Length: 76
Image (cartoon, rainbow, N blue to C red; front, top):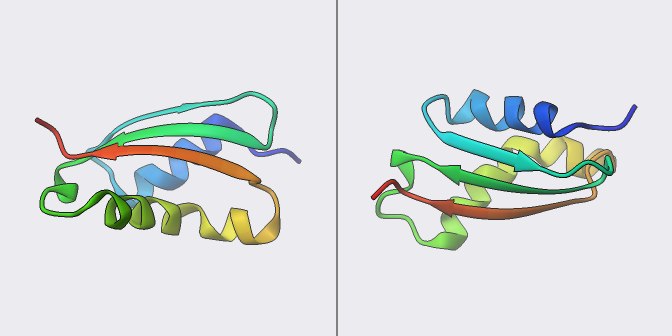
């Protein structure tokens, strides 16, 4: 069964419940996500993206999720 944008959003939201999250993509393998969360304050972009990637690591490792382009930032 292919993963959906909604599935990815739910995985990210488990770790970042108060974040603004937008996940796009409809081919079942390639997605883009924007995650804006206060916990990112003081973190560089690599640290932010590693934190988000950790939420979907199992899906990446299983091959269910092929690509997830990330845009992350703390709220302004």
